[in-house]
Image (cartoon, rainbow, N blue to C red; front, top):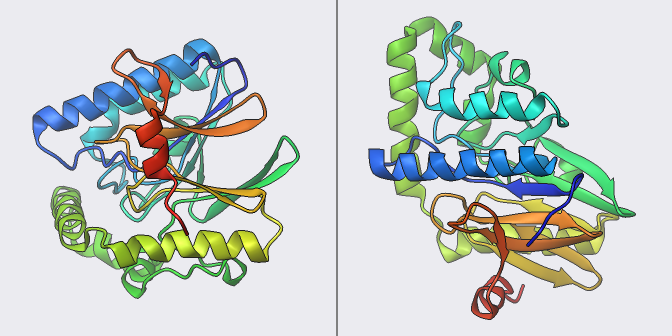
Length: 266
């Protein structure tokens, strides 16, 4: 697959820092490859949440897991448009570091018209806007509350606060998992939203399972995950495609089996 300048890469759910050292390095290397590829090709990048497994910018400090990745994103932003970073439920405690590195940070959702199609982009855990009809779970609302964050950072020094954030993120990801009913919640919401709104395309992540479904003439894409499946979406030649990141450092089309697996009936 040969992308051209101005094309867009969408990915989510990298959960960087959430695994053992070997797996963390494998994921980090793949993300660096992706950013370098986008820089060479002059592509836009949209992150649909959970780039990091835990993220808290804390009184001038941030987790060290971001150092190498942010370096390459800063290089990318020197000659390319800002990366849109829609935060997920694991990396929403942001501060000035990400904007200073060239990101446009959005804690809710982003809309854009691409090729005459109205596109809704979000993480998938929920948003505040009642018109989107995907409310966040109570715990997610609490963890994003600025008063809760302020009290947390007031009571805990940076080292303890960041460590506890890391521990909680790993435990919550392990305990929550994604049952069929949890995945169906997002898939069914996307179908209903496309049927009842003027959006033509919905792009999200969160449940870690790649999806590419047609809803009439409209399209629902779940980018899956970039820690195991290494799935992502691209916008090229006026069309959206679900693809995989290859070990050759570039996106590749899905195999027939992968396409069939992504087209779950909803």
